[in-house]
Image (tube, rainbow, N blue to C red; front, side, top):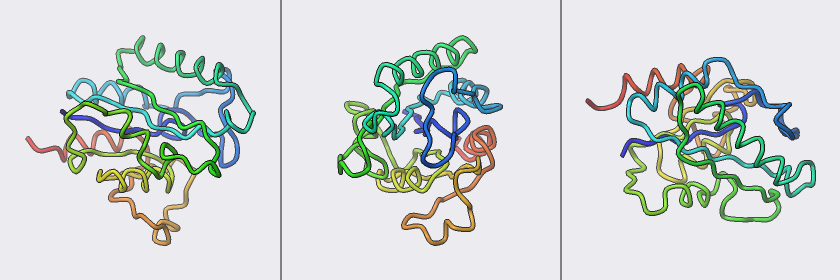
Length: 183
């Protein structure tokens, strides 16, 4: 099975920045070329799993209902444009909760693919933060850091886990993955 893990904020939609959250559908804005990149993955036989930390729920900044509405609308829009997401898996716990589902831990990844035949070493985790790189590495995936504004790539050398590859946005990453995949 060909599959890819994607973070949400900063990969599919514009990230509001460290410490802020997308709290409603009105605040959600797709990044340019993101839906096209998802469609391209689908066209090439990839199943896509979204793995995202959304601690704003546990912090009381927005409700689980708001998060559900954002997800429903995001999936509807992606589907309407010809793309498909296999599943969306959120950790809504605060960083202090110490749960297994919060990136860089792998609980959300494991939940997403439970019962599926997954070869993690041939999968990619694409994200825009050190937490995404850490989660991908911890799961045994190859990692791609996107330069969508959250992290300074010059700081990456100081991170616990180093990204395998760095690309400017999701479309560039997807085009690169498709060129690199074994034939």
